[in-house]
Length: 260
Ligand code: HEM
Image (cartoon, rainbow, N blue to C red):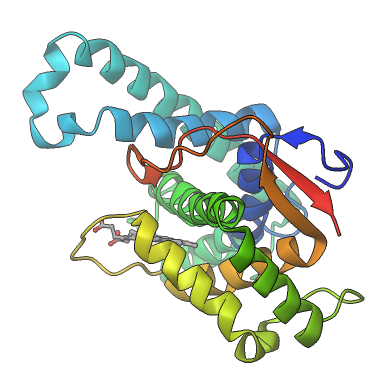
C-alpha cells in the first residue's frame, strides 16, 4: 500500500495475504511461504462455497443446473486444495522429521506417533487444514475490509482514531496488544463495524479462533490507521450492501491509502 503512494488500490488480496500469514504460521510454521496461485485458489473455493450454499440444505440441488456445474467446480477446487495441503504436509515431514512442536502439522504428527492412534490419518489432517485455514483468514480479512470501507465513509471518525493512535502509540513503533486498553475509540469502532457488517450471521456454534481474531483485528486496524488515511477512489461511491456468500462480504471497492 505504501508503494502505491495514495494511488487507487484494491485491498482484497493484500489483506487476505497479510492476515493469512498469521494462520499459516500457526498451521504450517514460520518458514512457510505461500504460493500466490495456490492461495488464491483456496480463497476462491471459500467464496464459491458461499455462492452454492443452498446445496448444503437441499442436497438434490447438485443434480440440477446451474447447481450441477457449481457442484462440479467445488469438487474440483476442493481436490486441488487437498493437493496443496498434501504438498505442505510432505514438505513438513521431510524438513522436520523429529516433529518439533513449532506448528500444528508437526504437533499432529507427534501426537499420532505418541498415541499410535489410527484415526490420526494424513487425510484427517488434510481435512482439518482445509477447515481451519480458510476459516482463519477469510473472516478476519473481511472484517478489516468492512472496517476500511467504514473509515472511507466516515472521515470524521477516521480523524478521531488517527488522533487517538498518534497520542497513545505515536508513529515511531508498531502498535502492540497492550495498547488496546489505551485505544477505546479504536476498539469501539471495530466492535461497531462488526455489529453493522454481521460477517457471519446467527450461529449456535462458538468460534475457536475468536481470541486470535480479536488480537489480529486490533493490531492490523491500528497499524493501518497509524500509517494511512483512507478514502474511496475519487469519483466512486461506496456500496454498503453485503455480498452474501459463506460470509457477508463487502462489494468490490477501490480505495486510496494516503501515507501519513
Ligand atoms: C473476525 C473473525 C472471525 C469471525 C467473525 C468468525 C466467526 C465464526 C462463526 C460465527 C463460527 C461458527 C460457524 C458455525 O456455526 O458453523 C466460526 C467457526 C469457526 N471458526 Fe471462526 N471466526 C473468525 C475468525 C477465526 C479464526 C482467526 C480462526 C482460526 C484461526 C477461526 C476458526 C474457526 C473454526 C475452525 C470454526 C469451526 C468450528 C466448529 O467446527 O465448530 N475463526 N467462526
